[in-house]
Image (cartoon, rainbow, N blue to C red; front, side):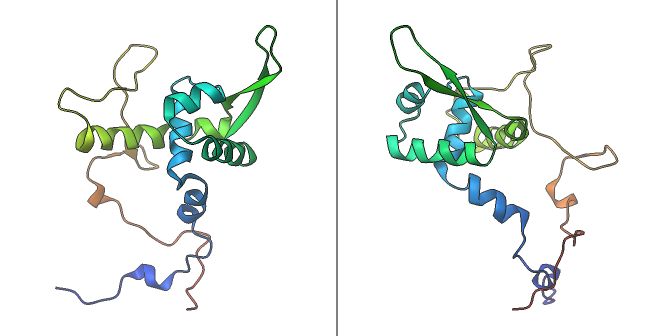
Length: 161
């Protein structure tokens, strides 16, 4: 058994992209809001009723996702009512689809009811189920996560602590 320290201990985490992404997505409410919008539930009252999130939590998560350009607000007005907003994915928000697909895949394997998941992602073109796939820059599909290793990237900084 090797007792060598992990190479990652030499790298600073001050500029870690995972930590930065999780500062936005790490709250349960953020991922739930994204799930709702991806599922087509875009209006505040519908989202609150369907998700079960408390009003203030939902309001805060929506504001944060708009502030970070993951969602944008689109005005609408039902007849006789004041103007309200729907929430739609921005291009940055659409890039989170694979993240939600990966979470859904993992949840299906480990937490779905015996009869299966309540929602699946499907390819609009053929109707077949869509799953998240890891692939390297050369186009090789990576089926075993053990075949993926972290390495210093161009923004690496030495750990000073």
